Length: 475
Ligand code: SAH
Ligand code: SF4
Ligand code: F3S
Image 1 (tube, rainbow, N blue to C red):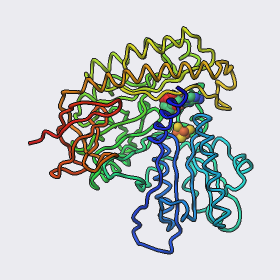
Image 2 (image 1 turned 90 degrees about the vertical axis):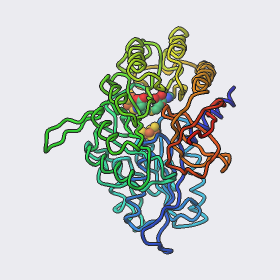
Image 3 (image 1 turned 180 degrees about the vertical axis):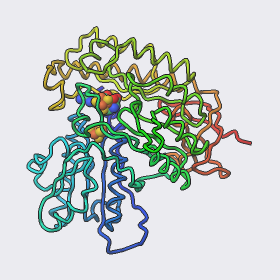
């Protein structure tokens, strides 16, 4: 079981972990310094790497997919769980050896681990030249010139305003169809287990105008799906100073959907305490806002949710699920679950299982609790559930979810779904792969009348545990 869990976790991590790709530089320059970026963690970190690539391109760097030929190696890091940090430290040892075989290589640590550990990171990982937090990327030119001058460099200042609104990200590892668009930064929620408020600072929303401009440019360059990103998208709020109009998340969703009916709109992450019926109605009213909501529950027990400081009860969460089912029939719902949080009793854990039975999530990311230094839970509560119990409960959650995921996929079999083609399937260029409205992966025989970025009607004929399989039925 341990192995299955590891494989699942690996798939999950790989899904989120990308690597740098070559990007077209406006002027091909063989002498340009080369940058390699590797990213870990959530979609927001991946989106940040694209902002970093834009800043570096401005400085004359070209990106490379091969760290061995890089002059500068950046690792954009995640602190969310201890094992995420351990993986990154292991990876840094590879890059350290490159500093020895290729002297002059600069290694920089970006993102949440840089923010969490600050200067300590340099003491612990001696061969790191640069430590830079998520709000300091504009300072890269100054910091790199310090390093070129023989010093080490650090900037981990968090900001209350920075949204990088004016920087057009350089899309890394892109299929030219889907793109992340960051709509806000930071988080003010203070869930007791979570390190994010400490690594990403206060919540702030990016101007709606700059979001609409970015989405319009993406559409014009052929992109057909955007994922709007924030730690709590439902608390998006921006005031247009010239009109005094307040743009909340529902309004923003509608504005993005209106850029063009051919662009699909997804978003992540919604917070159960803040998702409103207005947001749900906006999804229902726009055909191009996808019927798929990621609504992390964390636990099905009100007493655990209280200790987690999530600010909602089991009943509240169930009420939101019922509202989704009522307002957007057929909407897919996915979630995040933590097992073995401080003091979790068998009874409380059973509340999570019964919640899963009630909702039947289409998909879930599941984790065992990992205490993060400095968080409210680490300060005030005991991490008193032994690792064995955490793992056993996690196994139970994974097994139950696996059954539910399959059951939900089976419901699609026999139906016709509109699928946005994202490219060839991973396994074969004889097949296309894409997603349906509900975010499920669909694989079907390629057809030369169509190309990636096109919408096709697919009859779903069968499914595996994670994929729908069908055929195009367009005339
Ligand atoms: N902003 C989102 C999620 C951010 S982090 C939200 O509010 O839901 C992604 C997921 O990582 C969380 O939903 C949670 O399930 C998990 N997570 C966060 N901190 C964790 C910790 N200390 N141990 C285990 N899992 C954690
Ligand atoms: Fe962390 Fe909670 Fe903020 Fe999500 S909402 S990032 S779990 S503090
Ligand atoms: Fe990780 Fe930071 Fe995202 S801790 S999950 S990369 S906000």
